[in-house]
Image (cartoon, rainbow, N blue to C red; front, side, top):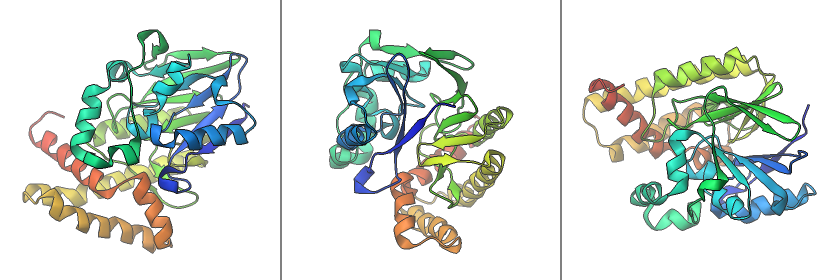
Length: 299
C-alpha cells in the first residue's frame, strides 16, 4: 500500500480544519488537494517536514474546485505540475474570474484572509478526469469516481483500497461525528446519497477526508452521513416554507448543530474547528437553495 502522508494546512492557524495528502511516485510527488492559496506556506512547510521539496510536486488531484480544495492549484501549475479536475470545473480553473467574483460577493474583504489569490491555469497544465477514468502516475493508478451532491464538479479518487473523498465524504475530525458541508449552489441530497452508494460499492478500507484525515469503518461513516444530511435538510425545510430569512435562520441553525456536537462530548474549541471547516451560514444558504430548486422542480 502506498505511503500516504496527511498534511495539516493549519487553516486560520487551526489544526485539522483542512488537509492535503502527499504520495511519492516514480513520476514525482502527487498531491491530493492543494488547499487555498492562503495556506500555501503551511503546505510548503508540511511537505518539507515530510522530507520533500514542494517543487517536486508534479501532479495535483483536485476533488473539486472550491477554494479550500483547489485555491492554490495555480501555484503548482506555474511550477509545471499537472492539475487533474472534473470537466465541469475545468473552465473555472482555466479562468477563475467568475468563480472569484461570485465568492467575493459572499466574503467581501475577507477573501484574502481566508483564501488568498487565485490565478488562471494554462490549458496544457489541466487534465480533465471523469467517472471511471484511470489516472496513471508512475506506479500508481487512481480510479476517478464522479460524486456529485456537494458540487457538480466533484470527483473522489480511489487508490488501492482507500478513497480520497473530498467533501462528499463529509467533515469528521478525529473520532467525532461526521457532518455534511452544504454550501450553495449545488447541494442535491438525492445525488449526494447516490454518490455515497458509489463509495460504498468500492468497499474501501478507509476514507481520506480533506476535513480531516483517515477514517475507517467506511460503511458506518456513510450511514451516519446520510442520516445527518436528512436531519439538517429537514430542519431547514419549515424555515424555507415560511420564507424565513437566512440571517434569522443562521444563529438558530448554529445553535442546533453545535448542540448536536456538544451532546457528543465536544468542547467549545473542538466545535470551533468544525465551524472553520464547515461554516454554519454556508449550509443554511445551500440547504435553502436545495429546497427552492426542489420546489421549482429543477432537481
